[in-house]
Image 1 (cartoon, one colour):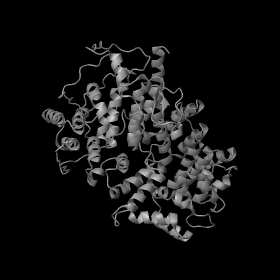
Image 2 (cartoon, helix red, strand yellow):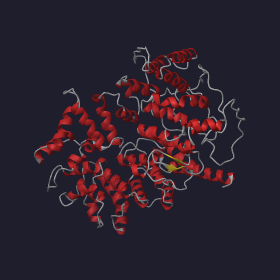
Image 3 (cartoon, helix red, strand yellow):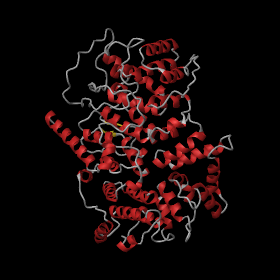
Image 4 (cartoon, helix red, strand yellow):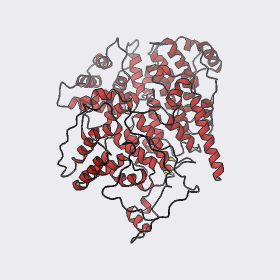
Length: 616
């Protein structure tokens, strides 16, 4: 494609992305109408420097690198941690590059020979296919984005507000972003990986974000990927993971965070002389001070012959930053509850994944992460198993762990049901969704019975973990018009008959019946489980305008027509920019479910539709 045509295609993609966002309504515009993602944390990341041009990616060094940095390089006065990737795209392989300075020839060793020793050609990974997971690991296929314009996809990712209200859509989005996918046209493969990883960080998926940035060879890193890698590795509490990148990152970005990473890595490797020298330079040039420097020194002290006993006091700190959270997690320093209350829900998921956080302090984060889709049912059960085996018999969560054991191994059905009711919080309380996730497989052990009061919760619990066929055994046992009946009508993979309008009208459900009836209609219509005449009648009666079109619906239709499940997943998430299920427009749910089903994601469509009934 000529350069001019490629530019026009990219511009058209960006225009479509902007129009797609504006079509989602004023409430969504507030969250998305920004050039960069909504901040995860309070201010404190430092000022964002002006975008710098990115050098073309290198599959292998073809010329000698510049001189190695001195032991005390001069850090940049820009922000201490740069959380946002630069909006400036890196050159795309094959495009006409801009003029670059002539490389300095190596004085002694042929760079091509040196490159072979550093990384043989057989071990290098192409930027044409980037990602840590394939279909065998549950991720999307390599062609998930088809021929969609890369700049358009990057704009969608950048403007998507996370976390999402839907556990199942969050899981689908993780499978999309962490997949080993073909780099779409119009973007650099490393930059595209950076956008994917940055969205995963904002979703709370720190481990998946780290896997994405580490799926790119260090020789191919761009300034944008260096910036995101710093944040992804801090979110996992892994400063040692910065070490292979630090030298190149300092040269490419001049960010203060990377300068301090060099000091920490020197300490971790046992070179305490260099670590102290770099620390002195950082203090003298005001690269870092106060608690930021103290946390870095605590990391250095963990290396051989560290010899530094650093006490961390939070009294003078009024905000958390990615740097402070990441190094606190790395060194086992407790984060004050008062400061954690000021950060977004993403940080809660990072805490849930951190082994440095004590078990009692991880209970609430682990449940929040499970409700969000970051932790699976099996992971949450294993977590409570660890709580039960801990030495502290009076630890918080121990009672829940014991009830969970009874729910699985109780001698009678009544014993198991009693334990489940206790975990859910009693009959008069609507259970937290995380507790339904926790009990999914225990609920599956309850034999279906007529007029069982816990039927709705048992079904919702099983479906939270995708146990659709197990839940379908209750079809003949649930009360028509109940929540359990509605969820099974949506989730049953073998449902063959369409419902009538009278069936839909009979649904009352629990909670806000009007909202849930609209969501049930949207789900049934999107799954094709209502007759066309009944769809039109219900749409009019319930005032759900499923036939309305806008730029977002047209973009969904285009992605469906082109069979791009990855693009559909992104657009589906764009249509769910709200804090809770009650804020999801039924018409948007209809479009999401219908589009997912049309690109072969029928299982996910059914689970999302059923989740709407369980959580609205």
